[in-house]
Amino acid sequence: MRVLDGLETFDRATYPKPVLALGNFDGVHLGHQAIFHEVTAHARATGGTGVVFTFDPHPLQVLRPTQAPPLLTTFEQKIRLIAAQGMDVVLRVPFTDAFAQQSPEDFIRHVLCERIGSHEVVVGHDFRFGHNRAGTADLLQAQGLVFRYRATIVPAISVANMTVSSSNIRRLVKRGDVEDAARLLGRFYAIEGPVIEGFRRGTTIGFPTANVQSINDIVPHIGVYAVRVGWRGRLYAGVANVGYSPTFANQNLSVEAHLFDFAADLYGETIHVEFVRKIRDERKFASVDELTAQIARD
Image (cartoon, rainbow, N blue to C red):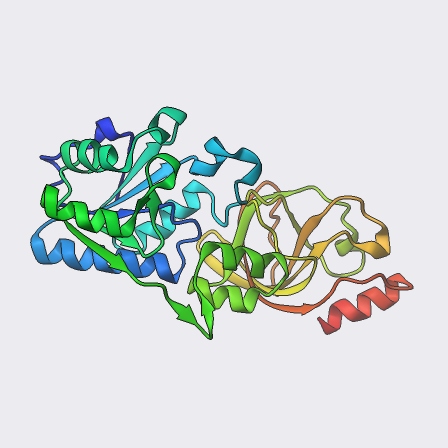
């Protein structure tokens, strides 16, 4: 999959009959995956190119920074997840105040049609675009009759009576409900980051931990979780504590993962932590021995 930075890098001769997925796609959840499935199926059927058109940074980070949501994925993580969906190209378009001033009709005419030459556009049911978010999926579909592109609207998806959306997943992760979040994502919620020097208390009580400095905006609610840790192409089962280690009166939030049957030195390494299930809330213990016994049970 190719990643192109900026509209000027898109060559219509190189990428014929573009079938576009339009959106932010934070989290690349099951709803986004349904859009990508439509794109790849139609691109293959028409001999076209499956293209993801997405903005960076998130539009709200430019227009209303105080209201911008914390993101489920970094841009690099999002790219890896999109690549796994079989897309051909990601077109990364810088979002600016000037770009935001375009009317929906101008965006369709000048960007989707004249610049990209869209053969088909696929969006979610709640897609909004253009100045003041005035453009809707229905408008995009209606304008397709004028500009001779096909527009497909993918309906909302529900899993276990929950609507699949990035905002719902953020709420679930923030309250520690990682199992329901995984149902909407189609995979376990994960963070990643370098392993940094900690207090080494885990080693002194027989449970060495990797202290992960998360690069993700959202870390699950404080508590103890069953996890899978990815490092150098392998996954290791483990348990992680998200919180402040109240038995030792830590001041800063930390993510400390203990990997089963693992002995390598991870300091300075970047690891990937998948949250499988919450085991219990974090709590303060009367003694280190009591804490050690609970960790063994965990």
